[in-house]
Image 1 (cartoon, rainbow, N blue to C red):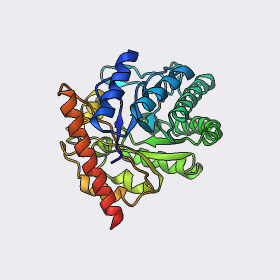
Image 2: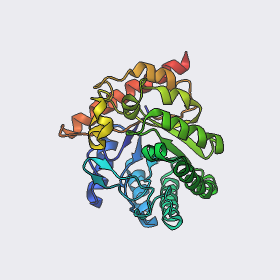
Image 3: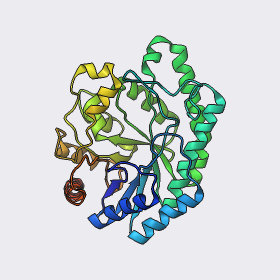
Length: 314
């Protein structure tokens, strides 16, 4: 059975040997695909030779690629539990930046990940777009400028993306109320077609940010081309909205069925979508035995896959 697995499940290492070992462990556990998530944040740029190296590892281990996690730009700064947004010109590479040179540097970074996806044989990248919604509330003109810059960037990326047959999938995120994400996705999906811009649904994020876990999944089902599957116990407290670092603790990245998500309902919804298998688990091993942890992940992923296929058959 085909099943994808995120490569940073045990953290990220800059060691080439450890990267290979991670892929080897994933392959030996029985997964068919990887979702490359190393350097999912920050401004690291892959050399074409690194891209070839990763692909050679995959080929040697019998692995295929189901998407990869791109980066939205330079790391945000954590100041007393609040993360600064990347829209200011203080951030060097940010496709939403008000500063056009920094914005173009961010576009260049996304194109780098599109190139990586093409080399790995993947048809999509996943991209964050963390909304500065508190600034939106203060200034309508700021919001207009923000989306103007975003659209400039996507206009410049669209042809590049389509030429390489790599779709950009925007992910639902933590820390932003769903009403602002609905505004975001409605605007962008109206402007750009599904061959370029798709949706990545993160189950863990969905279980935290809305009154209904699958609100955004159901609304954008026709754009579903990527998934990040993990479990958690939902929002711990409304106070988490005031402290970003506390909000991130809610995103436990548990193995499916270890938290509070309704996985049967998830499978029924996904079965009605254009999503192409395999699904991707994006989970985090926090100290458990690696071999048994991967076995538990494989079992949970196969269980969800079987459920989706069963709903599609019926």
